Length: 181
Image 1 (cartoon, rainbow, N blue to C red):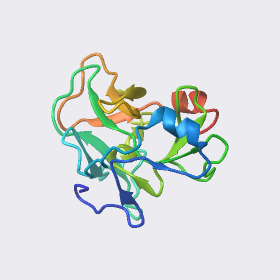
Image 2: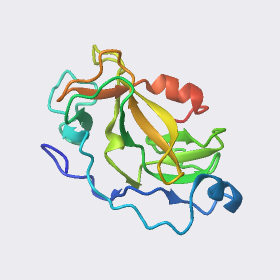
Image 3: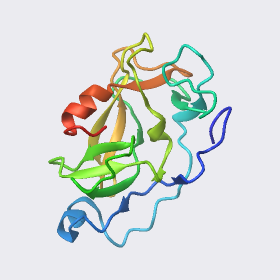
Image 4: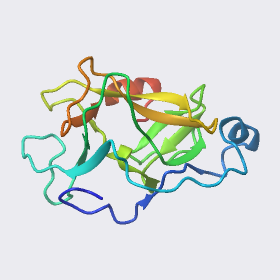
C-alpha cells in the first residue's frame, strides 16, 4: 500500500529474495536455507511508502508519482526497520540501468536489485538536497532462519519519529558497491 498513490505497475511485491541463475549454487547455499517455507508477503508495520507531494523535495515528480519511505511509528537508534528485497545476481551480472541495485553478500560478491521485485525498502530516498541528514543505513544480518538479509537500520542518534522520512546516503552505498546504488 502506498499512501496517496499506487504500488508501481510491473513491480512484484515480495518478502523473499529471487535468486538469479547467475548465482553459483554453492554461494546461494551459503546465504539461504533450502526447504524452508516461503515467507508471507505482507506490508511492513514499521515503515510505509508515501507519495512525495512537496515540490521542494528532490524526488518530487507529479507526473511520475515518486515516493519516499516514512516511519509508521517511532524507531530507536539501531532498530531494524525492514529488509531490502529484490533479485539477487552475481556481481557484474546485474542490470546496469536499474536505479535499485545495491551490493550484497558478505564480500560484496552479489548484487541485489529491487527494480522488478521488492518491497517498501526500495522507496528509501537519498538524503542530499532534502535539508536533512541520513537516518538509516544498510547492514547485513542473519535472520532467525539463518539466511543472509540486507537490513535497513536506524542510524540517527535520536532515532526516527513516526511520520519522518527514512533517508539513506546513496554516495556511501555507491562507494561500497563499486558504482552501484
